[in-house]
Amino acid sequence: MMAGNGLFYPIFGFASVVLFIYMSFADVRMGFEEEIELSFVERKGSQFVLDGKDFYINGWNSYWFMVQSVDVYTRPRVSEMLKVGAKMGLTVCRTWAFNDGDYNALQTSPGVFNEQAFKALDYVIAEARRHRIRLLLTLVNNLQAYGGKDQYVKWAWQEGTGLSSSNDSFFYDPSIRSYFKTYVKTILTRKNTITGIEYRHDPIIFGWELINEPRCATDPSGDTLQDWIEEMSTFVKSIDKKHLVTIGLEGFYGPNDPKRLTVNPPEGWASLLGSDFIRNSQTSNIDFTSVHIYPDHWFHKQVFEDYMKFLSKWMLSHIEDGDNVLNKPVLFSEFGLSDSITNFSMSNREKMYKTILDISHKSAKNNRSGAGAMVWQFLVGGMSDFIDDFGMVPWEKPSIYSMFTQHSCRLSKVNKGLTQQNPSFKQVC
Image: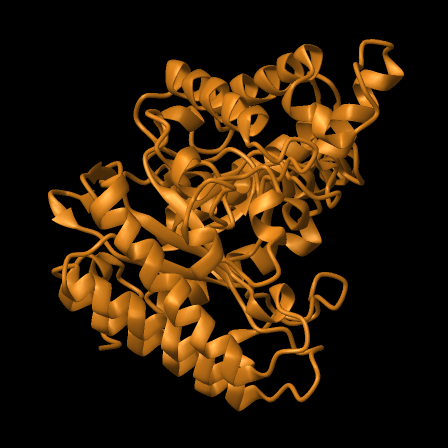
């Protein structure tokens, strides 16, 4: 009897622990698998449409979701940000679906993937689904952060297949194009280990952004970048016909566009970067276009009043293009005012952000192509390594929190209640 009891209690204790762990994770899994009726966001002319209704966006950027989901102890930051975003009535978050050759890389070498990082992206998508926040997922960076086109060029150079060490060879080197297509196909056809849904079949994904802020200054004619956009957008659509596709443009008018002289930032540099807002956006497999708003980075020796004049003209010009030239939605997918500029004040940031949201709201009220705006960037507390000169923890800035929440309330009327389908937001307005 003593021996029997001695064995019984440890076995019972071990079994209890196993059962507890199983039930805990089962609850999480069942929570993700709980059926949520979601439709894909579509495009009808110059408007986004959801369930047959116009859908205008109040959104934000949190590029850090995937990298913060690799380690279990930082994952709650993602859930916290999505939960607060839902409470604020925000509807779309733009985030990176890439990390090439960097720490905790998703793609460690061409076509080789880190399953732990992939499961982190699975988690981001599953959590977004749980909070009913749609995701605009970016597939590569024009900049060096998290690998970007530089990393692809290095890989090709290391393997002896690269045509050039110029990072712009990302756009024209056949071997690099092949690397990128392999990456894109792997992402689009990935079956989420939490939800069981392939990414290309998941409507919580708002759309795919080909590249963040593409520039190809070695070919200012724009032909190289245009050819890449046409090839890659066609490739994405050959695999995924359900999701919207955009490029990731900053919005600069090209070398042959008269608006390069009247609307672009001054001094002429913006038309010589190899991108061309109208030409690129007219690509048949591009569903909507994007514009960024950073006058403090684009101007030299200008004051805040000049930034404000510029941004109004900048936004209205692109909305006009969406209405009259492109017949496509125009999403202002990044905007911000740096806190590192001379004479920065929070009141100026608030004034600028309110102007952007007001122009966005007016576009929505008038059924125009200005499809929404997404601030750069929101974070949660304890993320000093990720915060930049634009970053904010929204609940630590009550005026900012209130501004964006009130804008969600305004848009919920235009969107005919679509925003209020999110249970977290129903009581706010």
